[in-house]
Length: 227
Image 1 (cartoon, rainbow, N blue to C red):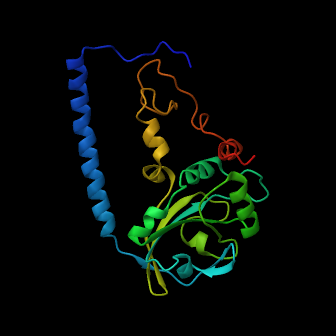
Image 2: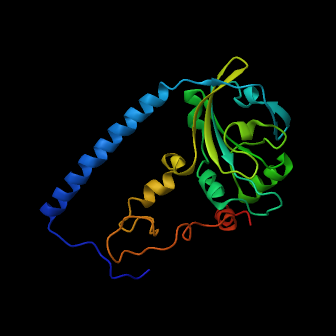
Image 3: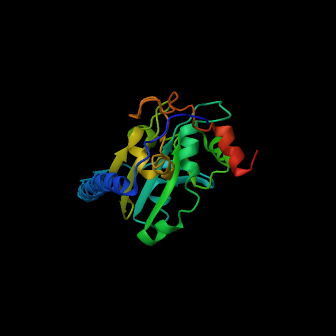
């Protein structure tokens, strides 16, 4: 990329003053995120009915998906019937989660649930080299009940298990999932940021239509070395 758009050059003292001003806002944002997390921990929950999904080894209840743990995070992956390459946003987002063992120390698990039939879902998982555990809600109302119906968007849901009873504790979708991703956090540190048209950037900063810099699903699979 070539561009004539550059930040102004200043002396070290001036640069440090600007950094200190920004740092004050960053610290305030961190404290606000702490407060949001505290409120999240105080959320009530809703009891769910029993659900049976499909896993790699056959039918499995929602309670069994916890694999003996009390807490569960579910990413509801978008699914388009008959498509070789599924949603690039979902494919790229979930490709980041290659090591989830650290959740075991917190008695938690993180899995993918999709509306695709289990055989197709597992074939896609292998095609793109995804490392997470996948389940299908194609024959269950579970996806619809937690905000991810057939033909619908993606979502993140969190659940708590007490014995065989499962409760829904949290949900987000859209840009609410960004805080779970390291990719945007890293890109937002860059001088030019995401370079998308909607962003508030200085005059003449490089910008392009939203999503155009995102890799497609086939490219993501290539990064895994599986195509």
